[in-house]
Length: 466
Image (cartoon, rainbow, N blue to C red):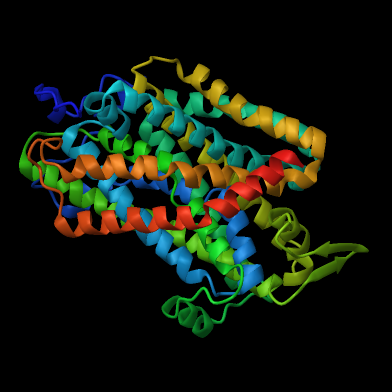
């Protein structure tokens, strides 16, 4: 049976002791709950921004590019739906962290028996490694495209970003948030330039609006790509991460103080994940305008076939400049890709620490955790690229998204279990509307996963066997 929640007052103190970065917990002062709303929002904004980078990582790029190229704007509504579901789940994760003082991993450790806790931890570690694989590949491809470094060595070079995170951790959570903000704005600004400044890619907003309000999966193959979009958008490790990051703000026991924290974090989540939606929508729209309706592209004597097996990220870089009519289009695309990979790898590493020490209460130095996580991603990437060549990038991205999609229900349902029962939240009630939306979201995502599971497993087996 499930354990009853412990009675220690520490549950409401917000002072987690299992996080190696425990010095960051409660390290950011917040105004008194009676202060002006503007001061409150300025203090609380940040955690969801870090979470949002997981929703615009290189894994999303591949599915968004494929969706736009193959179905024009037909799957834009799926991107919007996935983003809305992500907002609901992240708000619930923030609620758990604020009202209990525990992140999702710590809650599983405290309230689930070991026979249940251990498999959940292992599954989450596998998902984090799969996500880190996507970040490695995205950063490596960007380095390869920008500087001409062979892809094999570009993958090796990505190991150096361990020093970036260690430097940032030394300067505190606010510094990490500011750096990620710069990277996120770089991504958003790059696609704004691609769509609204450069010639040849001015979107048709009437078609976009029609696609958003008239959802359909009528065309063959749309359902499987839709599953891929949802699997790439809603990241399981982000639920663990967000429930921990909200604890970086100083907490108070007053009910009014917690209400302010919940309200401000809700705004933070909606704004940050809406920005992530705009980035993903921009990628899909750009691909729709450049690639849709074409079976192949011939540039400089090279023929690029556009189908399910296309390496969309590489083809997009090589073809954006001539297709858009500007030499800087491809460079801007690659810079945004590099920013995406680096910002995601920062938050992915923090999520790894949260998960390992929350589930198992293991204290591991940040640099050791970073090396372990990065090796788990680099080793398979190096082996596959070494044997199969640079053309295997898309296969690896597909494989990473399959793993993430399969693990997601094992993060969603424990989260919903904890926030649904007052015995876990010390009597603090989660808003009914949010709970209902949360359960609907979890069920819809699980159904999508089950429907797409046979095809996803078939793709994974083909990638491994080939």
